[in-house]
Image (cartoon, rainbow, N blue to C red; front, top):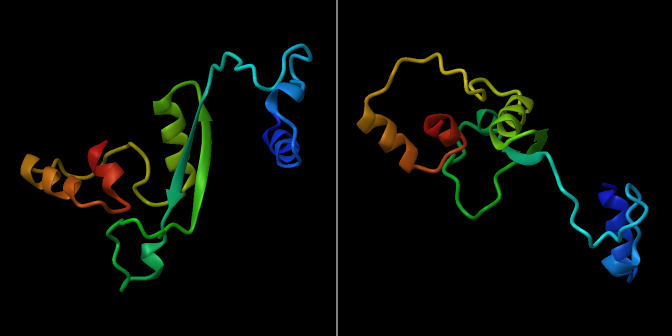
Length: 120
């Protein structure tokens, strides 16, 4: 779906009903197609470059970029997005020692850039 093209037409005043769908050529852009994919956007943090920075995530933006991935389901799309970040330990392949349940829960409570790896 040509998102940029549709966004540009919306910006100049067209409505979704007035914009034809380029793929079907029969329905307007307001018609919701059946989708067989999921898109995930994962933020990229660079706390390793700034050791003195607080890695706790708050409402302040601390990401330096993002990775977007498309998959047939959420698990596949999330795995692709995490791999696209190209950070050590950003895949679901857990190779570290099995942690104590209390330690894992304590780590999961603190919102950091590595929390998703703890939760998964």
